[in-house]
Image (cartoon, rainbow, N blue to C red; front, top):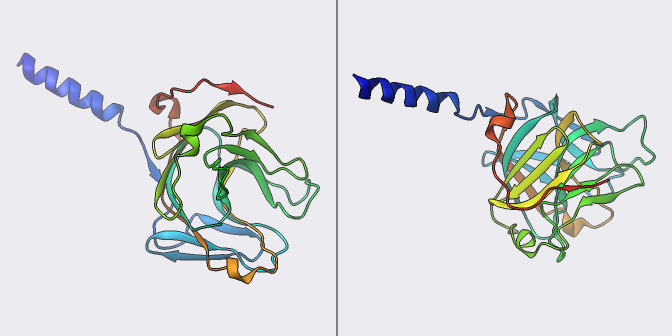
Length: 232
C-alpha cells in the first residue's frame, strides 16, 4: 500500500511539472497569424511556413502573431538557404506611426538568423528605426557561432521572462542578456526587403513546430552555462 501511494504521488507530481506547451502553428494554414508590411512571399510547404524575398520591395515583410505575449518560452525549428537574411522577433511593436523609417513596420528583440561569415545567429538585434544595433552579439563566443547550420533544420529555444532573454540554438546557449526595453508584443518572422536582385528570390526561410509556454514559464526554465550580461 505504501508503495502504491508513493507511486501515485510521484506520478501526479510528474504530471504537475509537465510543460504546458501550446502550438502556435498548425502546419496547414496561417490561422493565428497575419502578414504585416510589404510584399514578401509566404506559403505553407511541408508543414512549414516558407518565406521568400521579393524584388523591389520597399520594406520588410513579417509573418506576425495575432496575439501579444509578455513572459514565455518559445521554441521552433528553422531552416534557411544560403544568403537568406531573417530573424525571429519577440515582444515586437507596430512601428507604423512612431518610427523614423519606413523599412521597419515591426520592431522589438530580433533573434537574428545571420547568413554571413560572421555567424552571429542566436544573438539579439534591435531593429528600431535608424538606431539599429546589436543588443547581444556573438563576437566573443566561438561555441555559439558554430551552433547554426545553413540548409538543415535548427532548433531555437527562447526564454523571455521579465528583463531576462535567453536563447539556445540546437541546444547550445547563444544569448543570456538582461534588458528592459521591450516587455510585451507580437512574435514575428521576418522577410527582408530586397532590391533589384532577382537571383535572391529563390532562397527561402522555413519555420515549423512553433510552440509556446505562457503559463508560469518560470517553472520550466532551462539551466544556462553562460553568465547573464546587462545591456543597453
